[in-house]
Length: 585
Image (cartoon, rainbow, N blue to C red; front, side, top):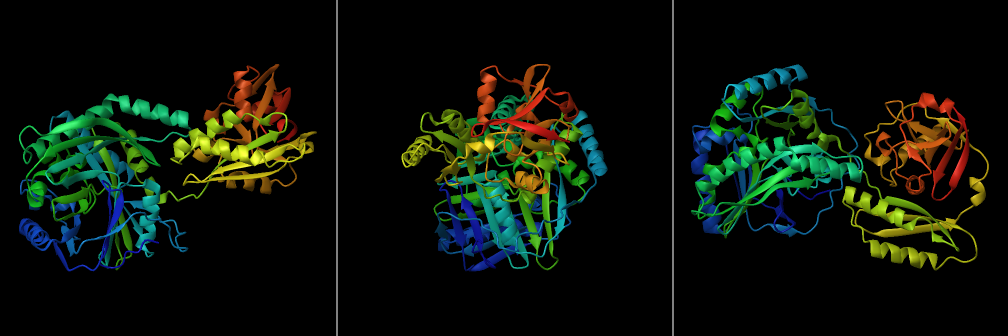
């Protein structure tokens, strides 16, 4: 559990890679009046500079007219337009473990504030505005709400674990709490150097490392996403140009692809040098162009007209600034605001709509961005089970290592191959006698290696194994079917539900067979040995891959109804080898 209490704030300093823990507020400043914003920001800034204090807090999207009267925004002010607390220098926390309390087992029921039909109607209106030249891109969004009476720190921990956000923040105002797992930088200031890093464009993660990389490559080269990103970058370059020293605005990194647990995101860095103070920077940059659209003024009018609820903090900014011209502000996306008195939580989502956007595509993207709310942390290790014999050593070792490396890359686990091989060699050096060994290699999230070994009773592989088809399908979009991990509840439950059988045959929502609980499956049809392709939702077994490359097997989608036509059925894995089966429906 994170330590933050009422009045305190926790902000991740991405540049330094640590957390800033602000405690014991000296003063809290907030307002619900647009006209008070400029003078309040300047007063806070004056105290920061003269007393060497730090200001930490948030600015609502609806505060926009307070920085520029020409900017339209909702007047339905239910929460402060901005709120900042002043602190002495923050405590630096090098590393935080985002562990939830034991009570964090309740799944929140998030309800969109608009129906899909209402979203479609608004989307169509946006497309019409684009068609008639009012805007080139509109960031069209909506809100979700849930009943919430738990500990807000639990939700923040869940969000931060799911997103691993560079610009995470947690602010506790007592009756109101802000939890942000934002991956997007609004701006950072270090002396005279200012940087922005707008995000525009998302894509879902793949299921396997191969599919994941393919999606990333297609996403990187997508003309639609590049055009959207470039449009926002041009707007931000223009905004920065108003406060930058002449000729210092530059774009060192264009169209970078960043990986997150639930999605891929396209980002671009824009740098400049400036002598402007925080109040002037906010007056010229806020709100961030990536969450409005282009052109900013007219598009914000469209947003105000079409979005059914005020954005509030969503797409505003959370951050801090301090002495010596140091500041960091995020874009308040992937952000929830909780009201303890009303026992409610609110979260916003949406995306940038351009002329060739589709309603289904944008709606699905908006749902992808809510995955952070329901994605429960799974504490698991990557797993490889190997066979060792005195004659041959570890069977198919290089294939096991390669698969482990790919899964480690997919889940972002540190994987030191040299250390793994040394650990296996050390383990095998302790084996005595002629017995074959079954070796479990575990790789933890922090890169720790664990090895377990026990004698392998090869008699277990002899004779026919009884195999029954599962009573219900598996989802082919479950990533844990494609990677061997200690997260094996699916397989354990199937075996428990079918105690009279040695193994269970899995199939997917398309009626295609996939694998068994412990092995890949092979069906002999008209003399040809077929195994289902990985895309059906299964683990790419090492023996399976060996036999495919040797030409012994061919890949083919096999419907469950075709099993009865098979001349023979057998299972394969690298520990047990070939296992003949007696199949039952």
